[in-house]
Length: 339
Image 1: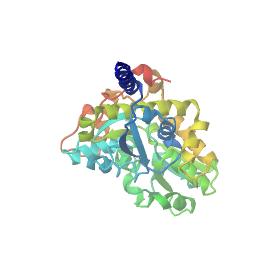
Image 2 (image 1 turned 180 degrees about the horizontal axis):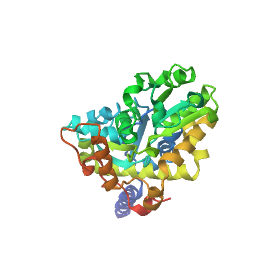
Image 3 (image 1 turned 30 degrees about the vertical axis):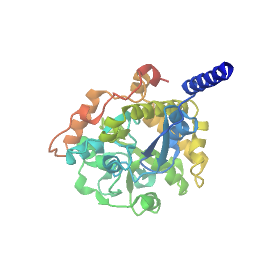
Image 4 (image 1 turned 45 degrees about the vertical axis):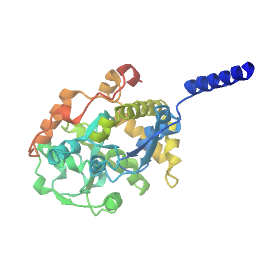
């Protein structure tokens, strides 16, 4: 009888030890919205997913395409997606227009924004002033077009001499390729390779990065719904940490990282998406500031200056401060963010 009791006690003890040492299997479901399609620059999120970085933080992450880098902010504000990847400059305006919806950026991804104006060499557009007298195709919800007024202000040309035509995203590059517009706004890496896929040679494409023409703005960042962040701070911190690991792996081996995207984009061209990813890494992710300070953070003085720049062409009702737009509270230590 005593032997039986002893065996039972040992069995219970063993069960407790196993339970205490086994990894936690419960995963928190998190929906994450990209700004656009499953293209090369989205690789870090899929790398983090495939390598189990999100799972290691207790997260079951679902990644969806988005409606554009401006319109998608409303998804996060509504809580449809607690986390999303959208334009931080549009967030500045969104906060002003929706003071009760305090969406906040928690991870800066594009230290240098891909906002650009693309044209073909034959149009003769070589700089901002040469846009005068031309037709500019611009999707209304486009993140680059959202910076148009600031771009005009900084470059002192006559915007009244530029005809703006509202075009849909699907027809933007085809219209430029067909000569129906002289230039288009968009993200540099999207427009360039979409035009290449339309048969335009790379050397015939002229891309004007707005950041090279007076804009000090940041680009896209991971944003969080405020109610979700308050209720789930560890989930947000875990998502940020895992995403940074995915970015670092992507920087180290883009050729391998792009394969994580192609698994979800069966109709895409891997060579094109790899080139798109490499362009984005060079132009948007990796800057001198990021090399020195690590991924994910911002220079708050620069962010404040960018809000000043937005104010040049946008009339605020209740102008947000830099700390209203971005918080570093969910970032891991700088040592974990360097590559």
